[in-house]
Image 1 (tube, rainbow, N blue to C red):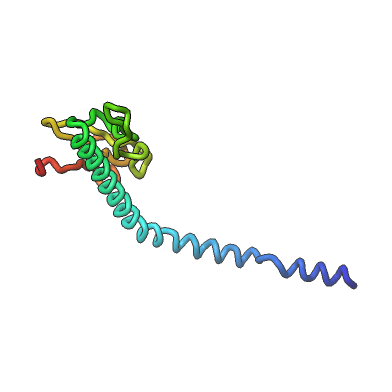
Image 2: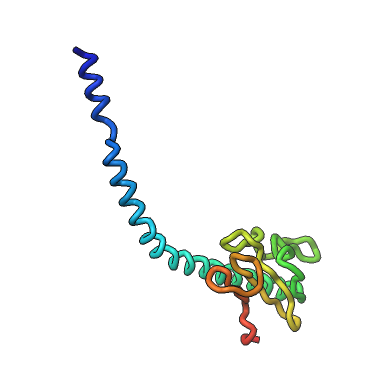
Length: 141
């Protein structure tokens, strides 16, 4: 008698094939709707992170310029920087990366720093997530 009761409770614990098919179909129909709603939010979040990182790198270069009298030659020089006497200066705690794991680019134009993010594709040009960002904007000089 006890075995019959255990078999019946075990048989009642699972989902039927029809229930699984209905749930999978519903998920399949809702999936694209969720993606179309979430994609613009992710784009804005990536853009916000990039803009923030570019400003942080630029401000770090300004601090080093103010302290040492010269612009750093690379972002590497801004990570845990030290002055001529070996004293720690304010700088970046670690090498910043864009939302896709690429390193930001740093160059001196007309004697001033420009920080660049080449977007998801890590190539010049593009739209959407492949868009390039610069800070400061060239018209700010």
